[in-house]
Image (tube, rainbow, N blue to C red; front, top):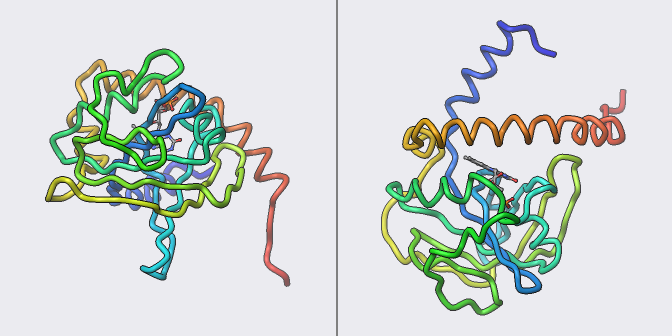
Amino acid sequence: MQTNSTLEGIQSVLSLIDREVWIITSAAAGRRGGLCATWVSAAAIDPGQPIILVGLAPNHFTTELIEQSGMFGLHLLRPEQTGLALDFAIGSGRDRDKLANVALRPSHNAIPLMSDCLAWLECRVFARYHAGDRIFYWANLLHGDCPSAGVPLREKQLFAAANAEQKQALLLNRSVDIALHAPLHLQWKTENLWSPEK
Ligand SMILES: Cc1cc2nc3c(=O)[nH]c(=O)nc-3n(C[C@H](O)[C@H](O)[C@H](O)COP(=O)(O)O)c2cc1C
């Protein structure tokens, strides 16, 4: 546990980070869904072999769909598409079809791909690592394009655009996830503790 003054310093550093907001979609066995994600990173040095790495919580509906299909779609949004991003960030696809009112484009691989976005990618998972409260997926990029021009929506713009009700729902989501994930993370950390050779 950090002392408060140390934690404040650390938080002031982390608050400088403003990640892109991605929508990850997937489908399996007649079900489809999607979520909002920031744990997404380009992960290859070779531009001829592009790879993406995503980190997803094991309890999310979208994760369940990727576990079954091994495929997912990735989308960057335009800065004004905050309402769409919040719709994917709040609630579970187990309770409603988050893609019901979303226009889709044809996919080569039966992945739900959104038409109206800044950019999209079709991804096929080739490696997976379960780290307790997150499952990391490494994926090859099969197809992709940028239907719009401009810069992507970032998380600070997203939080600034949320109304009071949406902010409350995001905070609730986060506290439920923290309560659920803390013991999973601790167990994984205990089992995988590493220290350098002396
Ligand atoms: C800004 C932001 C970033 C998020 N990033 C991630 C992420 O990288 N990985 C993840 O598993 N969940 C992330 N979430 C949480 C999911 O989007 C959220 O819990 C969603 O409702 C899960 O939907 P599902 O159960 O229908 O798949 C993020 C939420 C927000 C607001």
